[in-house]
Amino acid sequence: MTRRVLGIDPGLTRCGVGIVDVSSTRVATLVHVDVIRTPPDLALEERLLLIASGISRALDEFAPNAVAIERVFAQHNLRTVMGTAQASGVALHLAAARGLTVGLHTPSEVKAAITGYGAADKRQVGTMVARVLRLAEVPKPADASDALALAICHAWRSGETRTGAEVRTLTPAQRAWRDAEKNQRRVGS
Image (cartoon, rainbow, N blue to C red; front, top):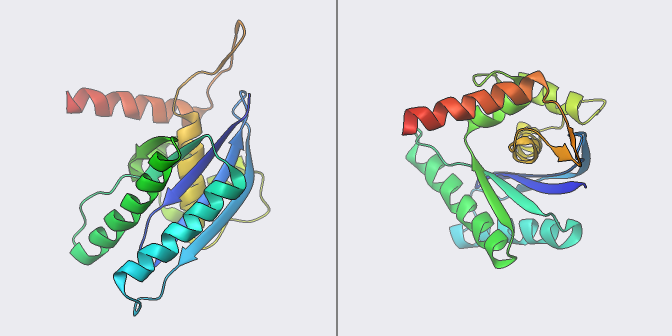
């Protein structure tokens, strides 16, 4: 069974949108990638409307089974975190309105899922996204590869995939992500 996941790297100026199909054997295939851009001089409500329209088009055209969104985290720049939170809210609303399952993933969870290292840099994440999806080059800008990384992370999040009596093994990056997630749960308890 193939799972189609829409990954969203929320942002007010650039919102990455990436869709992947992931098979039961964890093979990921690129379906669509885009970056929704809004001009900084446009009114906030108009910028959010542009983001909503772009995400809605992707949802309608590609019909994903699930949505993965980067979890908003505290930054030093309040304006940036507010824009990210507002774009996330739009994405959450659109997914909920369609009855889709939503996964929120921290940047370190995504990095660990894709690279095996939770503190990987953008270049390493982009390189691994290109490798996992068998692409000739890294999707650009970074918002595009980040959205694809979110989608892959979400599709891989459940650990082992069972097909009948057969258990598929995890890649080293998937094991590292699973272990990081378990450690995070222990710390949060």
